[in-house]
Length: 613
Image (cartoon, rainbow, N blue to C red; front, side):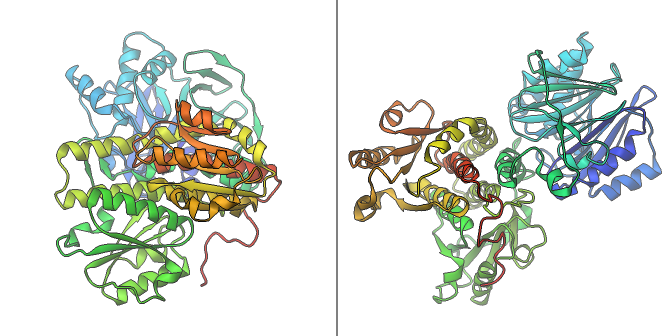
C-alpha cells in the first residue's frame, strides 16, 4: 500500500527518504521512486519492484540536494512499471508530486488536458493532478494557490505531497478525505513528512497530524497549516513515545480504532491494479480464472470462520445475483465433517485474514481431495492459504493487529464484488453498460466509507447511551443480514456484551419474546428492496417497549421517527451497502468497549489467528 516520505532541510534528502520508505515496506508496494530538487532542477529516480531496485539505480545515477519526496506504490491506474511509478512530473518539469488515492474524474480531466496539447507520460490518474497544478503555476499563481485550485477540481479522497522548482524552499501537502494519513515531523532547522509515523520517528518524535481538508506548507524552519480554502489554523504537536508499538499505533488510542480508520485506504488498495477504469474491466491475474470452465461449473463452496464467514454470506448474494452461479457458505470447522458433495466441477473459495486458520486450511484440503479447484481471498502475503491454492485474491488491507477484524472484513466484501463481476463477464452475462455501471458503483465505496468515518463523534455519543447494557439484539434482511451478524460479533467479542443476531423475518419465531425495555434492538435499515419489511420489524419491536437503534440512509425521516437512535450512512448502491452499513457498527462496538475500560485490541480468550482446531 502506498507510502510517502518527504524531507526539507540542509541535509541530503535522498538517504533520509530511502530509509523512511524502507520503514513503510510493511504496507506492501510494487514500485518505488524518489524526486529531489538538485541545482534548480527536479531529479527523478524510480523503478518497479522492491526498494533495493531503487537503491541500485541511485548508486548508478546518484542525486543530491534538498528538498525531496519519495513514494512506494500499489498500482491502481496503470501497470506496476517504471513509467507509472511515482513521483510524477508536470509537463514543463516545474512540479513533482506523490499521491495516495484515486482521482475519480480523471478521464474527464485527462481528455481536457490532452485537448490543450498536454502529453501524458504514464497511465496513472495522478498525472492529471500534477499537470493541473503546473497550469495554475504557469498562470502566475503561487504554489499554494495552484495546489488549492487543483484540489477543488479533483474528485475522491487524496493525500498529496508537492515540490516545485518555482518555490524550492517549500513542500506542500494536502489531505482530502481518508485516502491516507499525513504526518508531519518537526525538527530543528528541518522538517519531515510521511504517510505513517515509523518512516520519520528516528529523526523526531514531535508530530503533527493533518486532518481531512487541510493543507500544510513546510519550510525547513516553519510549518503552516491551513484549510483547503486558505484559512490559517492552529495545530497540535503530539509527542510520540519512542517505542515500536506507539510508532505504529500513531495518535489512535487502540489499533482497532486505527484499523477502522484505515479502511478508506485498505478498500482503495484492494481495488488497486484490478479495475481498469479506462476500459471498464476487472483483472485479477493471481486468480487464474481463465482455467475455469464455466459451462461445467456446478457451484462455489465458500469456507470461512467468524468474520470471514459473514463476508462469505455477503459474497453469496453478490455472486448469485451478478454471476448467476450457485453458492453455499460453510463454516470451515463443519465442512470437512459432513462429507460435502464436491467434485472437479466445483470451486472451493476460502476466506481468511491470516491465511493460517487451521479449520479453513483443512476445509481447503478436503475440497482438493475431492477434485475441486481451490481459491482463496487472504490478507497475509505468503500464508498457506495463499500458497496452497490454484488462484488467490490478496486483500491488500495491510497488517491488522487488533484481534477484532475490521478492514479484513470490508476488503473481502469488495473482492467478492469484483470477483462476481469478473465471473459474470467471463460468462458473457454483462453488457458493456452493465459492467461500466458495476465498476462505477464500487469505485464510490472509499468515499462513502470516508463519510461514515467522519461521523465517528455522532456514533460515540450513541455508544455512551448503551455502554452499560448487558444484551442487544441485531436484525437484518437480505444482503444486510450478515451485517447484523457481524455487528453483533464485534460487540460481543470486545465489549463482552451478550449480543445476538437474527434474520429479521425470524423474529416472530422466538427472538421477539426477549424484547422489552432492557433489550435494545439494532436494525440494519438502509433504503433497499428489504426496507419495508425491516420497517415492519422496527415497528414490532417498538410496540413491545424495545429501544431501537437503526442504521439508516441519510434523509430517512420515517426511520428517524420510529427509532430511539440513528446511525446515519450515506446512500449507496444496494450491493455495496454492506461495506457502508458495517462501519458505524464497528465504531459503536469500539467505543462501547473503550468506555467500559476493556482491552479492545486483545480481548480475553481470543487470538488473532486460530492455528489449532
